[in-house]
Length: 280
View 1: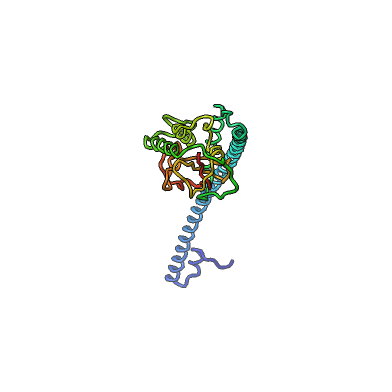
View 2 (view 1 turned 90 degrees about the vertical axis):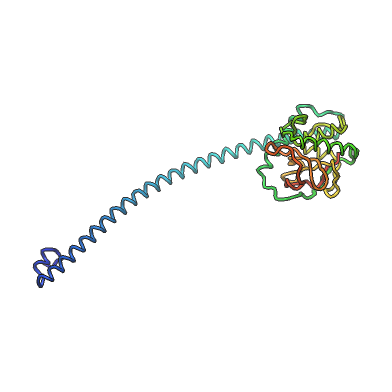
């Protein structure tokens, strides 16, 4: 019938008691090993099943997360497109105001136009916060400003003193405000020169971009206290988002932001400085 390695076969074919004991011991050892191997196999099967369940669940979670990311991206893209359309609309208003200022300075900027200009400045400031501006100062690409200034050295000194007083009083930054209790960046500039004696029609409430276009350009190396500084996130007039008052010695007075308020700071503490200051 053929040979085998079973308890009965060992009894029939053993060469004596010792051989039989050796055979039975070997069978017992093999049986134990087989049982252990079977136990490990079953445990491995259980682990594999659990791992598969976890993998399936993770894959499902990943699919859900991917769908959420895609939906969020679509929503963000739509919001960005809507924001850009609004910025483009406001910039058209700004360009129209500048044309009107150049054509007939005695045409006063209306309150609604001022509101629209302030909205554009705020929108540009928001865009600038999410823009990587790697340049400390932008190159000159042919910017044009006024041929003359409207202020005297005494006026500029008074404007600097006014700005200093507001900063030291720790007045808050509030968008659209021009004092006396709170300011935004262009509001501080407007109020400072108004306090120094400049009024309409020579001086009106504009925004950072229009002040850049409607002041006499001065190279950064030739700045004097009272000159205005401008910051852009693309190096163009329409992307100017911030304006400050030069204090001298590389420092400035500014209404920085809602989070930081009014500050005395270095002119290079904000990236994207335009290559010219503006002399009012």
